[in-house]
Length: 182
Image (cartoon, rainbow, N blue to C red):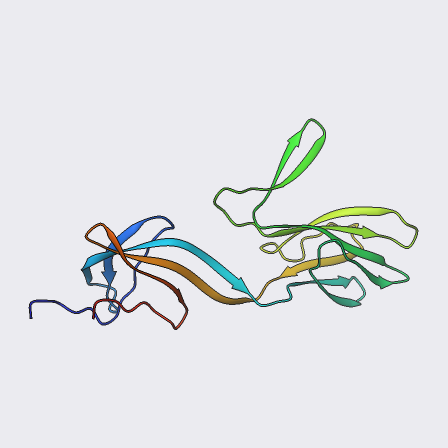
């Protein structure tokens, strides 16, 4: 009927952009759609609860859920741990002799936690724990802390744009692709 059907393919679309080119499964052919797809939003869903792992140098271990503001006892020898803040996109700036941690709203991803460790004598230490730099520590640290998030799903909010107008809106997930016009 004059319409070249594209039964399957992949598209690379950045948030906010429109695209109408599809890469076919062979990876060598590119076809053009008679409509465009706009990626309105993209997010990653994680299984709950997220958690941190704490391990001492002699092998004691704790798995602690990420609950901002909640103090978790470790043991009489190691004190407590409190998660002070969670960051989606951690950035640190220096103002004189002060370090200022912020959650940067701009593009990027640097998940981190601000963790307060209170030793049995009541002295506190603040540490930053990064998802992408697991078990980063210093020689004087009494234990390693690592931050784990397990991906549950990738979710894309799409708009189908045809003749300059939104023809359809759909949220797609892994194994739940978009079907339109065929």
